[in-house]
Image (cartoon, rainbow, N blue to C red):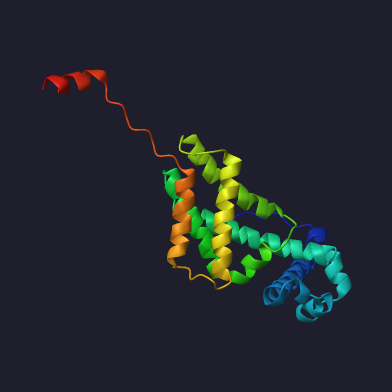
Length: 215
C-alpha cells in the first residue's frame, strides 16, 4: 500500500466549502443556460434565476458580478462548445477539403443547437472563446494561403468565409432553408471557388519534351 501524506486540517475544512461553492456556481449556470435558451436575455431575470437555482441574488452577484457577466460566461461556454464542433472535423492534409469540412461542421452546429447559435451571435460583445473560434477559421484560410492556393488576403478571405457560412447557417436555423437544401451546397462551393486558386500545371522537363518530339 502506498504511503499517503496526511491532509492538513485547514485543507480538510476548506474542501467541503469549495465543493459547495462549485456546486452553487453550477446550479446558477445551469439555470441561466435554461432561461437563456428558452427566451434569450429578456427571459433571464435574476429573480427567476434565483428561483430555479435555489439561491439568493447576493449569491449570484458574489459568484458572477452581475447579470451581464453571467450571460458572458454562458455565451463563452457555448462558444467553446461551438469551437469544439469545428475542431471535430475529420483531419485532412488538403487545405481546400479542410475548409469545406469546416463549413459543413459550422452548419451542423447551428442545426444541432439552434437556440445556442442564435444567442452566441446575437450579442455585440465578443468573448474569448468566440475570438478563438474565429481564429480557428482564420487558421483554415491561412493553411490555404501557405499552400499557395488562396486568392486574396487571409483577413479578407476569412471574413468572406464567415459571412457566407454564417448567412447560410442563420437561414437554416430560422427555418428558411433545410440543412440538406441544394442552396447550402451551392453557397459552400461558390465561396470555395471564389477564394481557391487551382494549382499551377506541372511543367515537363525540356529533355522529356525533346524525346517526345523525336519519337
